[in-house]
Length: 96
Figure (cartoon, rainbow, N blue to C red):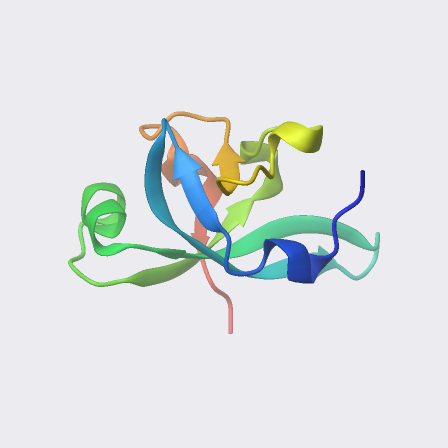
């Protein structure tokens, strides 16, 4: 099974069966031509608990935090394999 970037754009993002936001983009390492991160928009609740802000926040999420293979992207959305408490390790601000 293969996915195109458009297939996962705007999919819901889940961790521990909780919706925490949406996928808004993909980031590719141009040297290796490899997907390294997803650009994600965290909802207010997740942003408050993870980052201490009351706003919707965009961050990058390392793909190493995701389930591998088909388990990553389901009809429900994109599934994060790490726990909610571990998630900040895999999140980074978007570089401009």
